[in-house]
Length: 263
Ligand SMILES: [Zn+2]
Ligand SMILES: [Zn+2]
Image (cartoon, rainbow, N blue to C red; front, side, top):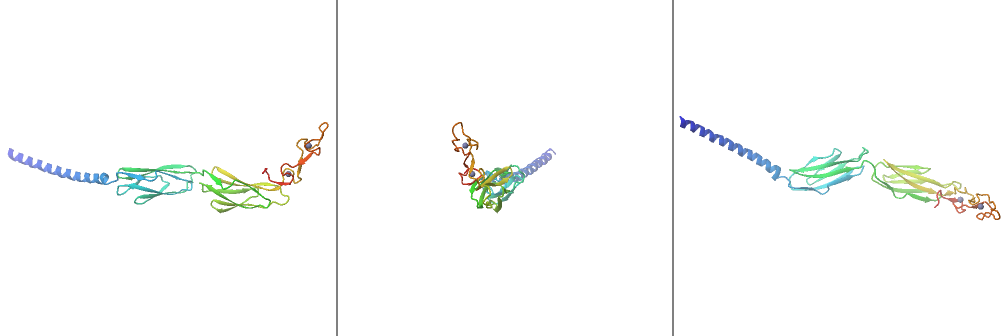
């Protein structure tokens, strides 16, 4: 009886050990397999050739090469304003125009197994510079057409003409400034085009030759010494104008034509 019981209990111990062994084997196989796939078979390193991307307000596209020793990689995290196109060993990052008016930044995190690679992404919300190919021109009475090329990191540039200047858009970054001719008796004038976007505004100025504004086409002006009186100073005539009260216009040199500002 006692013998029978011990036989029974020893066989159930054997069974328990066998089940436990089988379970351990199975768990080991699953665990080992998982371990193998997750760690041993996955990447041990992951590198990107660019870890920071900068986009202007208009957006754009950038390619990044990935160097890693795993079989696959995935995007673990990325800002919602960034579009990612995955390739085997590269990704292209595309960003649309930022219409928020604010700069924005975020991080793209790539993952393979337990290794990560991060790429920071920044995009401007506003234009930061507007640079015309020239700022000031002196032109003749005939007027004419003048091209100005604009260098800028913006994408909503506006150009308006003032004081009779006509503006024509030739290309996204090129404008033609059209100045009509100045008539024989038209005064010298100052025309300008204003380039603007967001908080930046830059003027491109044109000065057109015309009738002298200082002497009004007479070539002479009041003598500044005697204020035009020609008055004798005790015994002598005004030495500057010899008592005439007038001197040659110092703006146009007596030519009666000139510019608004002195060239
Ligand atoms: Zn005088
Ligand atoms: Zn003058």
